[in-house]
Amino acid sequence: SITARSVEVLDAHRLIPTVIELLEIARAECKPVHLNLPTDIANSLSQDSRARHEVIGIRKWEGAQRGLEPVAREGIGRFLASERPIFFVGNGLKLSGLAGPFLETLRKNPIPFIVSCHGKGLVSEDHPFFRGVFGFAANGEAESFLEQYRPDAIFFLGTSLGELSTGGWARALGQPELRLHADWDPGRFNETYSMKYQICADIAEVLQEMID
Image (cartoon, rainbow, N blue to C red; front, side):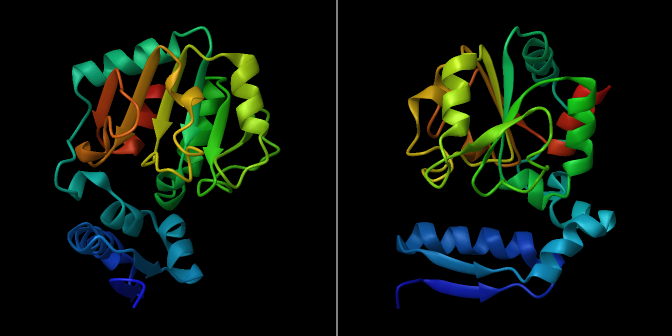
């Protein structure tokens, strides 16, 4: 068999435990794993806020924190005060059903954003601050924007910064002097790019901090 395990999730509340189990299997056996998430289950995550916070709610995940630490607030403040900040948004934000809070964040803070290939669809590409899709399966629009914009701060939200989403760990993503990464799993931090601020927290809280 090519994969170590292939699983279909039929209950939204089993998504996160299943993902964690598959990750452990993949690491132990050094083989790929496969997760099938039916469209109706994926859609339910954004339609049912209670289910969303039970399944994707990082407060319940081991290693996540309740509330933002002062150093996290400091980093977010520095990011918002930067001259040329940019968001890099991944699939985690989309799966968390946080498109609404992210749009509100953009309304309060007119900051351009790019998305990973898997994060595509979180927000309409017609949005005035959308600057393209980044990664191997993209058309180069985001890369061109980064080259011209030369951001001095970048905030990675809901992304593991894997090879596909970063276009083979593109150097351009690591060039901004101020780099922040928000994730529920502290093991994700500094795997590919060195971060000034590693924020282990619920992304909903991170967005709320920028809205407030």
